[in-house]
Length: 357
Image (cartoon, rainbow, N blue to C red; front, side, top):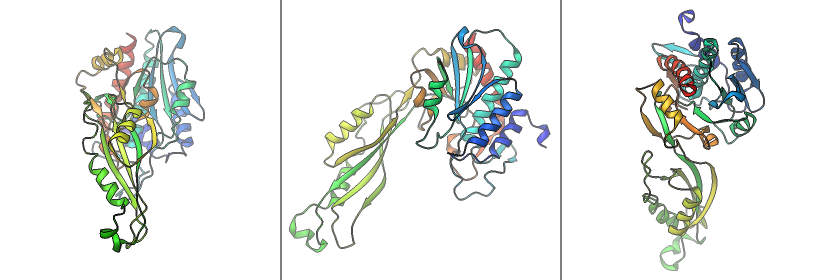
């Protein structure tokens, strides 16, 4: 029965039931504001985020707890209504349950717990729940600008409550081969360039192209062809052929260096289409990571293959940690373990106290 669940689980069920597909976050933002005010927290809601705080910014550092309210569209293949949360055993099913409403709810109630404890510490804990993270219209950069001084950040994403101390970036590139449009019947005798063949030879060169630099946590940068386009007709050699490259970068490479590497090694046109999601890593000797390890000694450190709003907080001492697993993100029948949500509430409250201790 719903009444037997801890308050954070009730809040999660109600938040998941609000369809907040990217661009339609307002009802979810209004609900989070309502819950925060009920917990006695200071709240600002605007067109970038819901910002919830406890403590005094002028008295010391600010620790940000950052996550997002938007979710991806449900897609196909569900065996349950994606916006009618269902609890089966330890799992709550629903779109956005793990990515990332579980983190939002755990952070929100952790701030409520910290406020209720009324312990004396110098500084401010500030939750930033932004919009549009799942699209190119992320509002986190503007929310960070409006948040005032920030010294450290916990990024709430599904990590099974392990500590992501590095995160891959994402660079998108179009690889374009140019050839000659001719009748395919003369391909063997005329000696002209087939754009598809040229593109295929260049794709073959991508394997291991960035392996010279190995990050200690993330490993090598990966360059993966994900889409192909080319052809005029079945009996015509194409004038152009195009491949989309998904490049998951590490902090060992800048995106400019990777673009230069591709241009040097390939004889196709290299068109960079996106570089904004840069790789991130927790600084050596991080006070925040030390606080997190004291709050959750069993938490292991690892490198995350997925991008997040961390890239907009990369100038801070930061880690990424939250309930759930990213392997269930964006999938049909997305779910999160309730035991992890409950544990996350306690963890976030403890790490706030440890950080300001």
